[in-house]
Image (tube, rainbow, N blue to C red; front, side, top):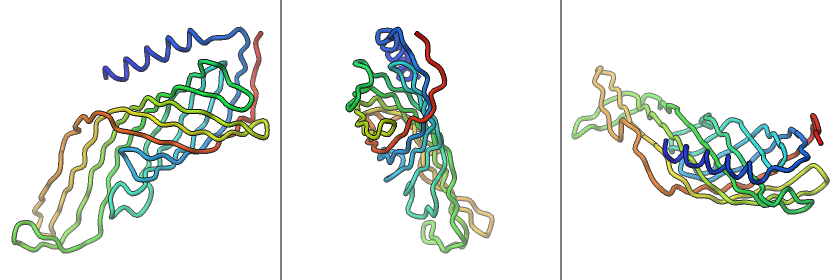
Length: 206
C-alpha cells in the first residue's frame, strides 16, 4: 500500500506541474503485448482517455502461460496513468507511466494420476493464482496517420503474488503445496509494446 500511495502522490504532483491552459478530452483504444511477472506474453486491450498532458487507461488483463497446464487466457484487470511532461508531440511523445495489474484465478486439470509421497492417487489438480503488481515505467509513442500511434515502455515495480497447488484425490483426501498466502516481491519488471488510436474528441476548453 505504501508503494501505491507514493506513486499516486508522485503522479498527482506531476499532473499539477504539467497542466496547460487548453485541454481536449479525447477517447481511444489501444492494445499491448506485455511481459511481466504474471505471464510470458499477456494481452492488454484498453479504453484510453486523454486530457491535457495526462492519459488514463483501463481494460482486461489477458494472462498467457501462467502455468503449463493452462489452456486459455486467464482474465484479470489492468489500469494505469501516463503523464507527458513535455506535452504530446506531433511525432514523438515521451511519458512516465504507472501500471496496476490484478489477477485472481484458478486453473483446474482433468482427472489424472499423481503421486503424493510413495502413494499413487487419481484425482484433480487446482492451482490458485493471485497477482497484484504495480509498475513505474518510462516510454514513448510514435504517432502516424494523424490518430494512430505505436507505444512502448519499460519499467520496474513490486507486488504480491501466490501460487498454491491443491490436489484432490478421488478418495476424498486433499493435499496442498506452494504458498497459501500472497508474498511480496521487489523489482518485478515489465515491458509493453502495442498500437493505439485516438478517435473521438468530446470537448475543448480554452
